[in-house]
Figure (cartoon, rainbow, N blue to C red):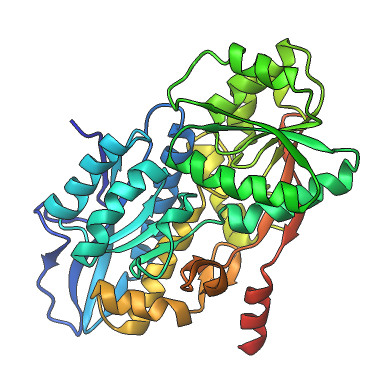
Length: 404
């Protein structure tokens, strides 16, 4: 049975359907419920991403509902979050997709993670006319053939080159690198991009190693890595628990080079798994939302997360705030809850994300402007905590802001 989290954030009638009446209103706006769907790993190694993902979505829904909901075409919609555990695999992802779209009649999927799971959902969402926001890293999910799929998180095409360049500036003696990825759609897509960028920057990829997503013994793999004597090792798409296991084994085997976890988002989760082996690890999806560079919204959300969850937020877990707020802004601008009309409006939308003003772009990279424009944040684990090194704003976002 699918694990489900349903956050009923107002007094609603529990009936099936993507939009259900709440009360009969005698005012200008009849009040209804708009369900936003989520497919994320809520158990297993990816749970630190998935559970934070859903928690932040709830915060966004509470914020919207406390300010009167979403208004369109003479109606007011209160937001309800419906989330299921995709267990980071294609089989469960397909079950979640069927449940969200065919059973629950969700018209807006506001957040998904894990390329194998997301691919299964996208096959249905595009066909059924469902607007879909994803944080998955697989490039195969983007393009003109997917007009209803938008992203809410930076992906390898945005992150890896700034991340690698920053590391090379700090470690100019790096000449060789070894890559590690899970042998699934996410890992396969990212590995191709990573190899091309390392080579572009003059660094030799001495080996690219693979493992199954559910692997638990990494000693043989690490022995292979250490034997190639790379200057740096990149754990590209590893969730925190798996990255920690590999880092710990590297420490056991005495390897002393530069370590990076490209999809590293939570220093706390990596440290919990890796212990001292996490120190000095570079990350591509982490952030310090208590730092001066953070916005007021990010500081407030981060404080609430630490109080309620015992963990700070990162770029993955805060991304659902941005997708939910983008959907709200687009629905109100389109004055419609038709997912196709809302999707068609998104490329021209300017909205307030957790980072500040944002929009969508990168048509040159993906063939369609479906990438949310967000800063790239390069960080490192220092004394067990996230230390931001650099924030890089996309040049396209800078130009869009100037135009306004």
